[in-house]
Image 1 (cartoon, rainbow, N blue to C red):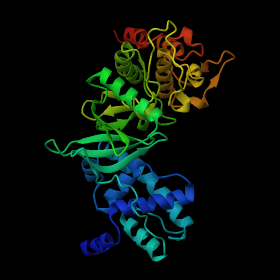
Image 2: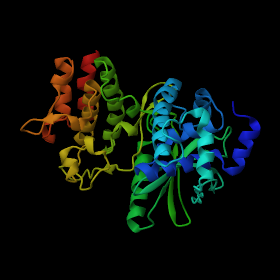
Image 3: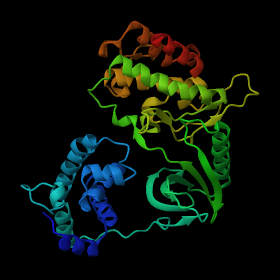
Image 4: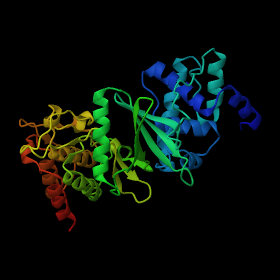
Length: 387
């Protein structure tokens, strides 16, 4: 049992946030990979002597996850990872292992060996934007933007929101800023698309403020070797396509559909589609309806026409179909073979009704002209399975 006086002494050395960053640096030095945001949430909670229930209740990153998943899956693999890293760094011996109870002790031993805690270099943390949005945590960094968790101090209970800062200050960035905010404004207040709360420029940077959705990405449920039941897959496809029907009717291609961008909302288990940073409006004056820009979709979900810079509405349908096949087979898309026409061969990897298999095959055809042209037609096909 760790005494309160011992905890106080450790807090004088570094805060839980600093300790989490310290461990993240150690992991990166040994593996060239950073800890995930969820792993860092668990570290911060454990260092404050929170239970997994308290971590779920108090940390917004962990709030959308089940307690059992946090403790039995994420934390289990986290302690194994830290054990390996700390052994390689010579902080613990080969017979020792890292667990929640000795995490502070392992950090203190690393400090005693001369390892220095990282200094906070992000000037955004704790910054008040527009006299309203208090930045509390850096969540995601991409080539184009940084996304932060913030509190809205102007509203009761200080609800969370997301603040995205575009990195570049170029004319092209200004165009991206205008495009994304214009598209989100056009999408309006759809219940399953995060609302754009504000857009502004400050200190030469462009900022977008979004509604924060409590939930977990369906990536957490797509576990290799654990296929879903057919009815669950049908429900997922219907959920996603219902949102896409609205998006496609606005002549907008999402272009970034993958498991991390589909959030299962905690309140009602409905799917919410996030991250419209790669969207492209269709030039409706062109009969072809094609665009000329590359999308941001994760590699496994990119259809061939999008890979060469010409996405269409049916490019989103391809990504949805890949998700459905992944859920049914319990296999990553790149594990599947293709036939001599470039179409996926997957039916022999799972038990599936011919009706659903036919729909999925049409969704992911290599030849985009033979797919469902938009979410409207794909949803109609799926609804026939549940009527």
